[in-house]
Length: 447
Image 1: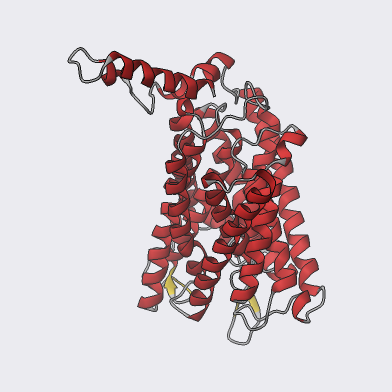
Image 2: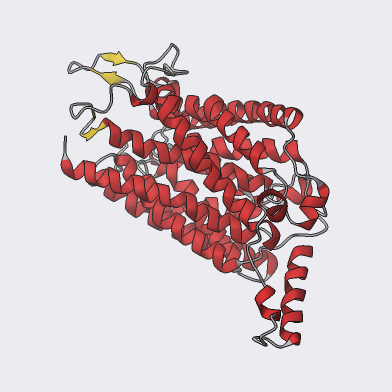
């Protein structure tokens, strides 16, 4: 055991956990004031459901002994983390429990990401049911495909086979472009189809109620993402340093590219665009951060930022109400970042592979494309099936009156903002002020 590596991965796990509350702020600011609590609760609920399932069967399914073909680990091999709690149980240079904790945070945020596609109209209980089923049937197996590398003996012989994408296909996905972002984006697309459009959409564009919350969430996501990417080096080493730099410059380039597209297309560079560009860049560099140089990272970020800025408007043409652009940012960004590895990978980076632009031909490119398409297809089909299963058994969508009146009140008996004090009898606010506040809230609800 290396104490420096252990300390870094523990800190990274905490950073990745912070990303889910950050996502709650990011998504919560983007919805209307009458559904902000429900939106945040969907992220918090994912923390509860997936956190428990991960310890019970999730880690075993993802990292247990392969059942054959690199498709699935033994679900009950480490049930309740049995056999992993002793000091001599190591994963590389860190205690196995530290690795378990780190990977748990990936599982949690992947499920939480999906919720943005069904904002304003999903019931909380059925969402928790879907989250648990999806983690069991989709995320845990895909994590096995992508993150479980073959265990080898001192002579290089495989003694513990892992997932097929990581080993047989040899696609590069350093921190989860396929397993996290394509996976969640495909599920988001499926659920948007299952639940249908919000009342009033697309005639009413339903603007964010709090851009400051959106910026706060984006900032927390960027901060936590260093644990996501640099932490995936599983050590305090040079690879962590390269991925840290690449994460920074790719995100910066994506934000600038998104703002440029907005400026050319709409005449304005917006705060929402800046925050969305940050997330798009983070998504894009996630699979590529170990395989590209900083110049390649800038290219990956800039290309993906522009693509995602263009992609988010397609939902209006296609008639698919992806409420908070999970498809446009995470699916498109994940596909872009994963496939661009095949173009911009350089053997000067830790992964040691050359892409098309560095003399490597199309060998890595086709591997990236196959991995991306396989995860998309698997996640979309099963997510569609699970979504309809929940819909037909317990009902997934809220009643129309609840959606129009406010899903926070209907689902949680709470409201995010209480303006009652503005019209109190002690004269703390003039009637005109109280009336104005009520008008603002009413206008927000209508919008």
